[in-house]
Image (cartoon, rainbow, N blue to C red):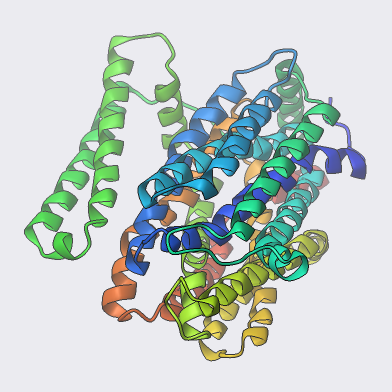
Length: 510
């Protein structure tokens, strides 16, 4: 029993919802730093205001993944979560640009990002559920196409509304320009309708069918995706003690040194180590005193026994997402300062620069959308790992090149390399990972995989402000150069990843 090959349009329909999800995500990435600065945030404080986004993903995605793995009703398995997230995100997009103060805007970012994560996480598992291994690269590439397409339009919306339709691009001090507000309203409508389209036009396999597919794969190849052994209470407790002590030691070092005074965000990293240790200790206590399955214990068990391929990809993801997180939060202040020569968010020159950043984001996302059709072709020729490494290296060189450019229109050229890197990040790691995951844990492991996306973002939010202000003396463009170096390290780390699907193909040929 095998999953049937889906037609191009069936893959199109099941991926279309990502158009709206990325519409909201791109509006957030391109405009939230602008909103924060407009409401009075200092450049060095922007990373800590953004930290809501990765922490929300860290919490929400594994929970939603676990819940969707164990959901099956007349609405489906993943699709109910698509719609719940879409409704909440739509409301958040209407409210975000109307935030009256900085702290309310920071809170709205938390709510908006959490809502986007509710819809986004099941979409990743959706491809693994519905497509055979030989179509998964195409499935994730199609998602990447819609991500790029949605982001192109959403990132450029303030520029389009201002220059094509005459919508006001400036406002009094402390107020959000009308061009930004209207962009968020349009994004809310697009997000809701596109997710609804996928829900109405796509079908899902039942849990029984997915189990049968998994058994057939094992029978055909002799390779099981992952062997899951329950973690004992002693193992939980031992690991919990180690991580808790690491959190205590890190907190103590920050308190005893001057680092805490200079960079209070470091307490967040130490606090996360401590919280993770306490969760493991609690899981150990619950395992020892109860035989009833528990969702949190199950997630921690899966984390400690994650497939080897996932651990290898975690290194690649760390360097990749640290770089792009730096880009999202620092491109606007970097370009307005380095190219336009201003840091005053109330001036027309600053807002011209901020709008041009939206255009740059649109270009890299447009390249990402086009690369969705090119990357699978390249991968068939040189393999997914070599394709991903090449794309990341191109992105790293492009980030570094921004330092040497002073002409706004010339900034478009590096965005081509950034776009190829982004398109690959959105597809290749997931295509490689899916072959190593069991069908009944697809959502949970996709949620856990998100840890390795948000942890580098949390680290970046904790240290980039300090690095920018103290080491780079406020030259924000140097932070983007650092991001480029991170991408190059990510490219080098790709070659130590084991692609399970390649093993399956070799076994079948034998």
